[in-house]
Image (cartoon, rainbow, N blue to C red; front, side, top):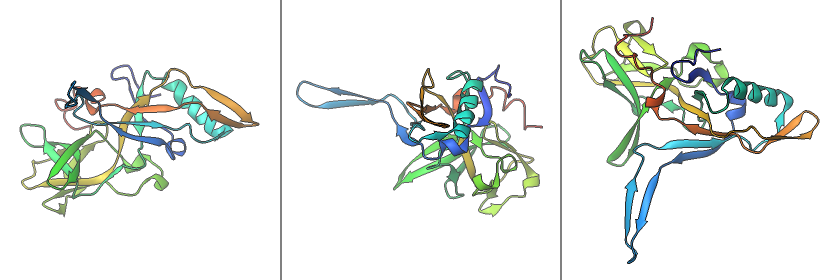
Length: 231
């Protein structure tokens, strides 16, 4: 079991066979005040969207039931966060893969995904890029790569921190740095009980399997910059 004592985060992905087919999407918290005359005053309480999903829409086999229950128990329900693959939004192409320097010497660069709408855009912090070496081939589509001024950088010249979404260069790049790859999002269960019904022999239905995205800052390791690139 992953060490969860310090951050409350297990660096393990929610089982992909169960997350496939989840219903849900992005949500913002906005407070709307309506005056007596009908005018509105709107306050965006959240600067970033948080996704919410539910994977209780399908009948589950015994094997899927056992997989979900084991993951639920090892997460202690809502206690510990984990990686979640959002099947509708899990990849970045280089034209939307933004990187920003985070250290004074320019060697440490944070990963972002840019959502562009005309001349307006939002940069979403990506803290859990996917390491291809630890996921099955069927789950991989876009290999992690880094580019400087559109030219692919030699992987020997940088180190990727897949736990905090940081690329450490051996020497600070002098051009525009971008990236491509796949990513997970930090998430946790969002219900107290895993309610289920045995609908047939070895087949189960679940009342609710709610998942909610966490803000990136909630799971980033505090010492990831000062400690340097991962060994």
